[in-house]
Length: 114
Length: 109
Image (cartoon, rainbow over all chains, first blue to last red; front, side, top):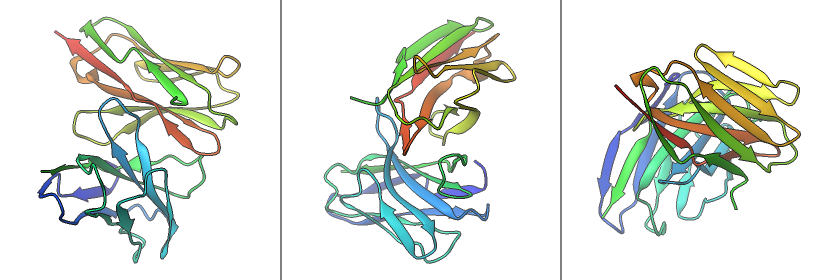
């Protein structure tokens, strides 16, 4: 999984609770990304960060928040405002935000909210 | 409508057989096209990347083709193995990256 770790692999939460998913990389990559994967759909971009202390909304940022205090870490918080949070979440990183650079993905976290 | 359409949605083949997966896209402008392999419950892993000027690229038993004029790509898998069972995702980059929904391949003994 290319030096990217995500934890935990499975996460269960009750509706109304915020939950934070961890993503760490040791590839010295500047850019990091969070995607959501649902059955029958392509990956959808939640947030991305090109550099420490900077991040941008992706296509489906509502109900999510992120931080980038360290180059190695890009945690994602799924808030109670996210209407349908149950999904498989993937973190990725690349040398730079440029689209010619390959993205390396972590192993994913499967979040189930009941 | 998704800008990257993959077909078929799922495919079952016998071990040792060949197969071809399709990817049609409408993304414009076009920068590159990647094929990823995603094992169940894992993150995607890159197989190939192709730019506008490339029309064929191989990675072992995997061969990707690209027709930028018709905006079509294919991934051909030769002499399939049980370990090829996975989802194969087509990703097209233009102004942004757009992901196909994937083709779920099952290789049976």
